[in-house]
Amino acid sequence: MSQANLRSSLNFKKRKEVDEMSQETYTIGQVATRFNLSVSTLRYYDQEGLIPNLTKDQAGIRRFNNENLEALQVVECLKTSGMSIKDIKQFMQWSSEGDETLAQRLTLFQKLREHLESQLDLLERNLRVVDYKCAYYGQAVEDGTEARVKQTGQSIREIANH
Image (cartoon, rainbow, N blue to C red; front, side, top):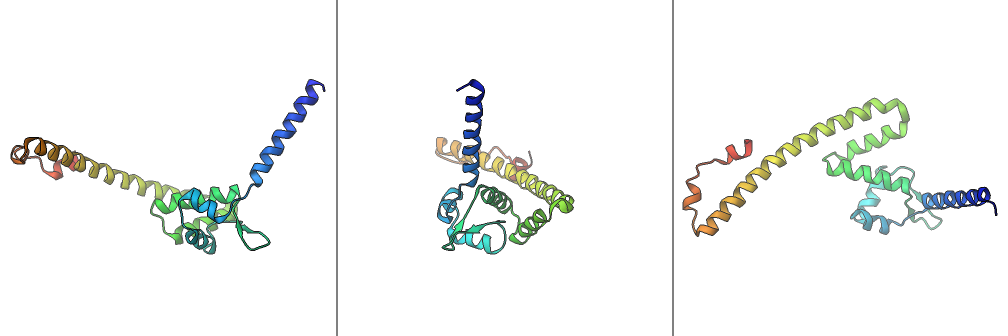
């Protein structure tokens, strides 16, 4: 076999493997395990239309493909970011409508980013307070009393806003 024919044969095999991987499907149980979600949550997401183009086999069993998994990953990101199911559903609807809704989707993600930045600021302030309290009680345990650490005079407000 010539080098060109061998290369062509290998490329065909690679394309076939990629096509087979993209056609691979997963059961609801496999997806539940992979995403650490309950089967009932996945069924609910399906009923709410949050997983577009989800198919069922001849027995009526849901079969998730890689496209469905990507959509589910976005749904979970939005949900854990604090977005309501109603708003996630709206986003999925906009996504299915195509380019006409690009501006709405951009606005949605810009607002979500602002919300997450605000949450991040709050978490960082809370972390400073927790770090202070860890140091405070660590010193108190080492001293066997809070007497010395109480004399530092720093307020929690000062720590949080530092």
